[in-house]
Length: 329
Image (cartoon, rainbow, N blue to C red):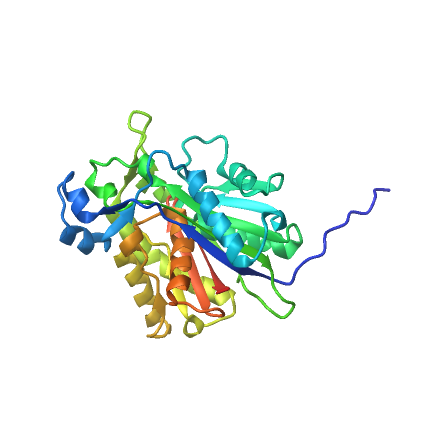
């Protein structure tokens, strides 16, 4: 007769405990790019809504940015690195597939020895990582999980390609996830999926160039048509209505996409006073970092308050998408 297996004590729900972010100091304006490629400020703002973006210097690595954001999130949560049981880094821009970022980040934060792994679903990565962290907390696998979205897209951009160099940037954002009170649900069920038939629309070209390629119009049409239903699904899975959402933080891919998603949600009952993230204007598209960076900046600016009901939804290369309703810490 086999021995009886045991499971750890479970938690009724999870919640965000704190957030943090990091942006490089170097600002690249639209005017700066116009000196290199055929573009101008008005053209860029009309197409993607970006005024400026941040680009890391050669000596700043992706793990460097992830460590800074993770440390800020732990401080905000009032926790020490020793309190962390797992580190998840969402990224698609590590210089090599091995080693992963998470183990390095955990060690440098002082949380060495904990579970550490990367998630690569590009711009949906933070929401995927948050979904996994939520399940880890609820199953009793971990007490505290640090989820970081970090990207150094500047290493993968052809700076002479007008279709990509105006969009992408570098940053890292993080959140600490822990157990919620018995009568509290701080992170709703994840609504996620993929559209692999569109995989080639965002990809790294062959080894001869090793640069990011994006079919912008195809991605734009897909995102404006397919992501609002994902957002509505996440709301329904959380047992809420669109009118219950205080804040919308979609992946900061393109300001026109963000506005289109918000418009469709309002058409389905979201409030006119719904606060909508627009961090892309001054940060650019930072892939998996964009949602946690936007959230942290909105908290710092007082645009979101503790207890607000927020809808997060990420989408991008893969194509992969994910979203969930969360309560602001």
